[in-house]
Length: 106
Image 1 (cartoon, rainbow, N blue to C red):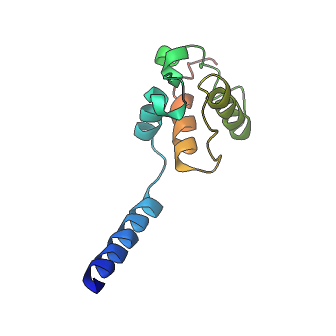
Image 2: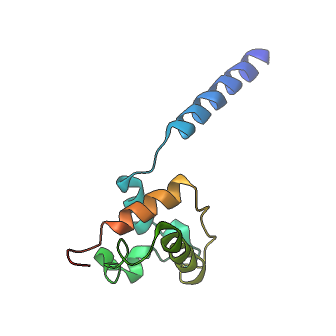
């Protein structure tokens, strides 16, 4: 029994180490943008904004805090989900990805 407990502790520590080392990324942001798991109604960000439609203003019109607020408002309202922690890797990744829709001259 002690051996199983020991391996469980080692596994938990390894998982925690990888979670801490994880960073925000465009790939993670894209996955979240297209994932219906952000909400509870079967929709994703891409449902309302296919290909980033109507998000061209994202990188230039608002600072990061305002963009995070808008993202959470959409998650809570349109997707019927729980808002993300503004400091989370998921939120940072999602905001990073949304900013890629900014077009030239915006």
